Image (cartoon, rainbow, N blue to C red; front, side, top):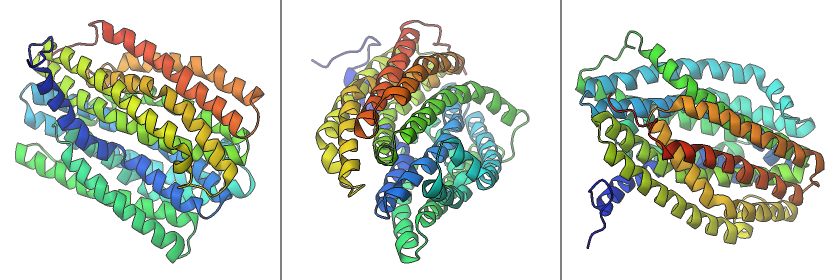
Length: 447
């Protein structure tokens, strides 16, 4: 007998809907951490100093882009709701407005990154050669920021339209181009760490151009204007501000973690770059399920189908925790071999391996957190996520400061640091999002 969900739909049907969006979304979601992994592997062969510099610079860039994730998430939720309510032209207009907002923010951030690179690197506690390498990478990659944000906005619009295949294709091609450009510029041209940053910037600009063209074609077909709608950008900002606050809480936690890792010495900082890259890779893989839930739940709420929303929530959580178990096993058992891809320094490899064991144990909880976070974003529950984001940050910072004050240098300190981040911080997020999902205040129906 075919299992039936509480909504009356076969469980297999619900699973197909989730996986039909999640599997293609995986490629687009892991594009950014995959770029960081490629950069880490290429730059790591230049030396520990360059790898430590990349750790700082890439953290700053990922932080900036992460703060702008509302360009994707808010757009996905609004587009999905309008599509569910039968307003395709309105859905496409939301996508166009998001592109204009992304382009404007991206240009401003690129200029700020070029000018403010020394101050940003110094704020993380870097000095000497490590700081110099970080500045080189940050300035070389800054021109790609408009492309990165356009990728976010366009991808968000396409997810809301339940098209996760197009971003997958663009991300896959982009990853290959990025690897080739980085090898050519770093080793062939001899640009060093700056070549890695510039190659990534060129790739991001190209990806942004392709995805913008796809959204523009869809907007024309639906009869939407290519100009920003009156109040459209303002509405996007209003919707995005709570998600910006939520993203800020996450990025502050990550920056605090990098600051603590910097104080644990070059070995720990270099190892942290690799562990953080692998964590990002795994986290975005889990978030693919959340992206599917965002689109499906937004569509269901727009259509007023509450039972479908509940079914999607339950099955998405099941898949999230299960995927967390699988990823944990891979990271925990393969740490030593994975570390060899990024460094030849045995001390760095040992620190990576031990910290990955800590991450592996806590990965199933991360699967729960990422899916619930995505569900609430898809429901437009940004205000709640903003408030509890700050609460979880308050819970984590004392633990991070304790590691900074009392943990030993090297691998042991890094293991304690990841225990605090992947344990305490993620547990706080699991509790707050779980309590919200048990109620019904977040299930607001209609466009």
